[in-house]
Amino acid sequence: MININNGCIERIDLDNKEPLKKDIVHDARGCFIIPAFSDSHTHLLAHGIELQRVDLSTCASAHKCLERLRERISSTGAEVFGVNWDESAWATGSTIDMTRHDLDRLSRSVPIIMRRICGHFAICNSRALGMIPPHWRIIDRKHGYLYEDAALYLNDIFKPSPEMFEKGLELATDDALSRGVTSIHEIVRPEGFKTLQLLRSKLRIRIAVYLQEQLDEVVRVGLSSGLGDDMLKFAGVKYYLDGSIGARTAALSKPFEGTRNLGKLLITKQQLIEMLRKAEKNNLQILLHSIGDRAARLITDAFRSYGLRNNTLRHRVEHLEYIDRRTMAAIADLNLVLSMQPNFVARWQKPGGMYEQRMGSRYQYMNAFATLAKAGFKLMFGSDSMPLDPLFGLTGAVDHPFECGRLSPARALYYYTTAGPYGTFDETKKGALAPGYFADLVLLDKNPLEKQNIGHMKVRTVFLAGKIVYSGDKVKGQRQ
Image (tube, rainbow, N blue to C red; front, side, top):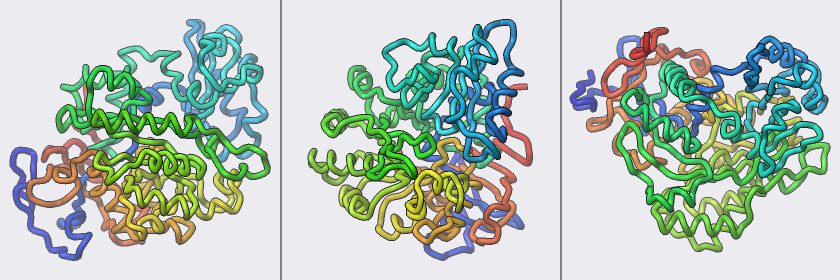
């Protein structure tokens, strides 16, 4: 029995009294009630924009990608933007075989872009390449290859319309709610934050916003972490320290398998120290994208040099996919919060998968959730919207192929429900089946604490502030 008053749990009768489990699962006549999922790392608006572009995620080869792009070329001359291709899932061929000339054969007059699923690498035809201003860095104009900023921020160049942003928010919110997610830590550019503010009255999901690489502007206008309300608030600033494993741009101490490539560090130690100084002075939380061990080492070197104590602003490290033991201990001493993505494991960390292809035997030590949990780290789970699906993510944590990452269902569920709100200072409001907490709830068709159910559960009903926002296969509150 759960009594709800004014959007919050007023009273709840629980049979399960086990520590850890008692506030996260309740048997309710064949359904299982849990706190709604909190995704600690999303690009919801970007996901909504991508839902309106050419989906390349199901293509099994480079040839299929090109075919799908050709189908979308029209006489209007509007750009054709393909997204989410993943060559690790292709049956034949590789992106190395493709250049701008392959896209030029589709059209020389229509701008054509195809961006990898990680967002850190894209290929453009000559027309699109000519539209990218010269100040954008890390571009191989001979081959039409874009890396890091130039790939990540293509929406700054090929700008979606306000209508596309609004429709994108609606589509992506529907997707999130159907998967049981009612709270997200959303990473956006300024245009995205503006869109969320303009559409504040239409929000159907709780959003904590992190602006990408805008620290100086945030300081200039006087924003501080926590400004806003329980539906939309400003939470902090995010920076990239390196790239991705898939794009071979993550910063590693030893080269990617079969290459001399160590990836890329995108900022210096001194820049990171200055960033931390500004953040601490102005009450701003910072998120640091760190994939490779060299990027993680940069964090510990810079934070130690600055002399961080206690981490009262809860500065965070995002991803931390590969890290050595020595750096792990140093990060633990700094009390940094970790936001990790178990769906990456489910997609790429199986034997023979993309991680093993890129990293060799090192892939066995990646995404070490269990090791980090045992070391006492403050951990939370998110998706990076690849895909925005906690039930899929749970399979990556519970069925991790190696002991360093394998978690119990209860622990994995905890990191996807109760732990996330700590990152945005909301741990007294969200993430528990307890009086005084928001009545943001999910009903599952199977018990998520039983391992045999992981990967076989469905979301039946989702509540936000005690009101049904998803039931069966229908999202409530959609525009008709």
